[in-house]
Length: 212
Image (cartoon, rainbow, N blue to C red; front, side):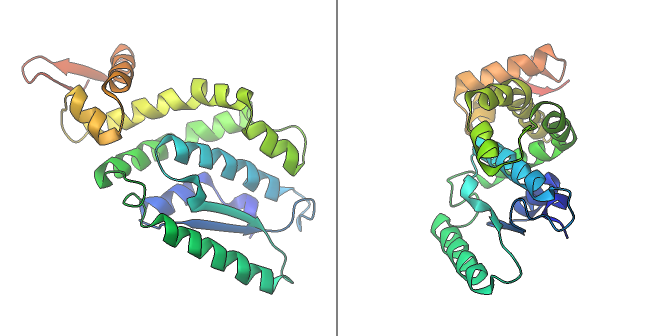
């Protein structure tokens, strides 16, 4: 299967199922077997996913994309041994990153709900015009990308996380901040934004926030 067919949802589902790491192997760039440059699509997806992982507190090194050919058996073994060693160093997902287990679950649920939107954003606003590994890495490390990510994804992701946890039961600002590993000011800002958009409301009787 072409590495370009590996969807963002596949990676997030693997982490949601408790996998400690995800490895994707594809053909070398500019050597696409199907002449579709699907391996560049895989590279873009992985670089975006790493940014999302960083945003929710999951170490991006838990996701690895490597270019390999069918004739590189020895290198494949070396790469897998190296990746396995790295995952052992990082420890179990969540526990290894100091994230509350329930908090991580809510974060992954929130990201999963936004996948259709993020794929649209990637297609419309985050495409790299030049097919080269250098161009892809340069763009996804640029200030331009970071600004687009903040404007188009980060705030919506925070709101999605808040609505996800409030879907279970009403919570105070402090409780929301603790579960999502946010500062009280960050939690308050995102709650205010969620309230303005009609997603959450303040329950006066219980002195906490709930879904609208």
